[in-house]
Length: 405
Ligand SMILES: [Zn+2]
Image (cartoon, rainbow, N blue to C red; front, side, top):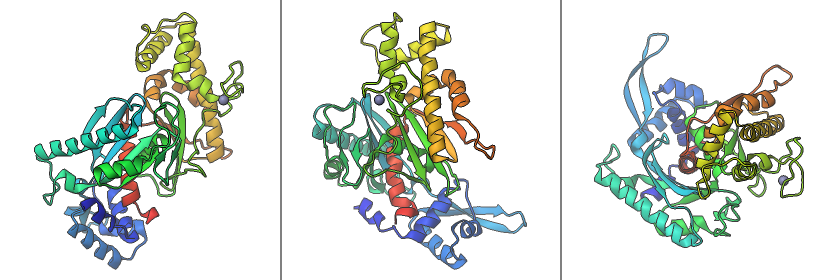
């Protein structure tokens, strides 16, 4: 199977060179790869030839250096390999097939997970197979003529926590009541014949961010994902930090210092009391603010709440204001704890809320360090599909970036 044989690629120096070329999507030169990797010119030359023979990189034209000497351009061949991503979200299952630069070549949305996980996984496997057949019908081919199924490296799955990353088991995700101790990796490998990797959706989203942006290798990135709830992830040198039981980043009960609202855990002012979307929407409705009627999806009711706050409704403005204040306090704590180079916020709730809450979040969180610097606070550019995209990049990262080899 193609997916298996590509795993043999895993020699550290080859992956180091491949990463250096990948992170310059407009092309780079052999000298720049030598400089960036610290490998010898002879080694880079040999490895470059091997990667070209495998069809993973190509040479194309010349690049004019500052000293005038033309140099051959090395460039990744994005369509040489594919990976699939699966996002198990309570609102629906998203599937994507991406190329080596994590650009989507096919996407599909399925009905939400049910109380029958093996049935859901069989459904996912069937759809992934159908997506590959569609690509074949549309004439999709690698430059050396392989079809999508032959180019497929493997599958990444992103799930709400908690998960056992090493064993590939979804343990107790909070909004998927039918999914308890499900061996997702083993089931999906059995259904598809492809290798599968599992991680939390926050770690997947973070991996999509770090895969798509060519930051310095030593960079640490703090990511906060705002969906139905709130989660965070931290990557150090391009790798998500999992913690002892993959529970790192579960920040729902982080104290915000705000008072007056009791959390289900018994304490006052936990972050999730303010940022759990359903809690916020129920509070608005209980205080007499109609959000478009019962039975509406929470995304529609949230959009309604934001529109009311924008129009000056005091109840909506107070709830949204508290969301921003709590999030800002939590981010300040995370920044103090981790001192990241970059801080990225994303997720479907952030896309809706950020125009209103960003100023308050920034005011509370962006407190400069003693040297006067403050980490940049960025909104994710990857949008709604970041879960599935991130799942696919989890697999690309495991197979194609050098640190794990
Ligand atoms: Zn709590």
